[in-house]
Image (cartoon, rainbow, N blue to C red; front, side):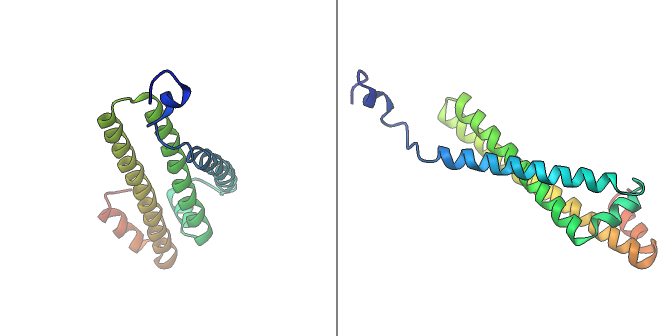
Length: 147
């Protein structure tokens, strides 16, 4: 295991089997982001106005909520994959790499959870405004901090 041969220089650097999977995941999430982003743009352009009630009632629909949830998950997962490559390429100390990857995973999952929570909140507020004419919606808005 000397340093003079080609095999000696690459030994101990791990398997090269996961690169294709990572590359494909980046492409799949990029394609998903493109399709879902165009769907979101088209959906928002076709709304009659951009008042909170209009957008909330649109997001309360099952198709819109599913599309928004998939867009949030795909976008943050794609960002995580890209930042993982940056960390793997430019952070050289093993302890720093583990810390950076752990922080990246925590931030990614927290952002996905927050996005899904806000979509659920829009669904609750949108459903409440369509059911009771706004009385429940105003109570929910005041409980959740205003808007």
